[in-house]
Every structure is written in C-alpha cells, then in structure tokens.
Image (cartoon, rainbow, N blue to C red):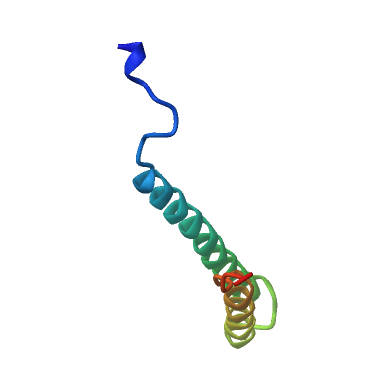
Length: 76
C-alpha cells in the first residue's frame, strides 16, 4: 500500500484550478465589499449624500479593477 505512492506522478490540474478560482473570488469579492462599504458609509454617515457615495464607490471600483486585473505574462 505505501509502496504505491510515487512522488510527482499525480495530476494536479484540478487542485491548481481550484486554487486559482479561490484566489480570484477572494480578490474580486474583497473589492466588491470595499466598494459597498465605501458607498454606504459615504451615503449614510456623512452629509455628502447618495451622489458622493455613488461617485466614490465608482472611482474605487475602477481603480480596483485597474490594479487587480490579470497582468499579461512576460515573454522572456
């Protein structure tokens, strides 16, 4: 039984795909929560109101998308 194991022979494509999917969900989910928190904080906790909350949430979303998107792989 213990002799059947050979290091490095197992196909790990499913584990790698799951790891990448979890990382992506954590990254984009964190951005969504941050945008939501900023928007409702600006809307309800400051005298700025809904428009300032919506604008600041939109700006954070755009900046977050720019910084969190996948970078192209280097070709060297």
